Length: 142
Image (cartoon, rainbow, N blue to C red; front, side):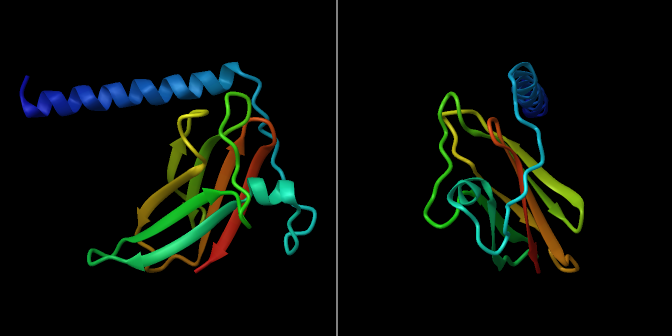
């Protein structure tokens, strides 16, 4: 198998794995309700555990900025157990989807990063899904 064929096969395997993860989420009872904190300026412990934290790093030589998203704030880390985990994290730049990470229980923690060109972006939005406690969103002005 030559390099090009190997790359094609690897891409197909990655797509099948992603479809499998999405199918697993669909077959389990996932909470897909949009959640909002009672007071966005004073998050409670459960809200801190689920709200995405957006951290913007420095721009690299090619114009890309590392944007890290972790689920959990204030020293409270979201668990990753067979019964309670973050199943996805999405990043949007001015409303346009930048990327989505699909996560598995136990083996992965609620964190991801994307390299993004932010030159004219005014707002970042992160969404994360907890299988038990719904979808949580946070925004960050740039």
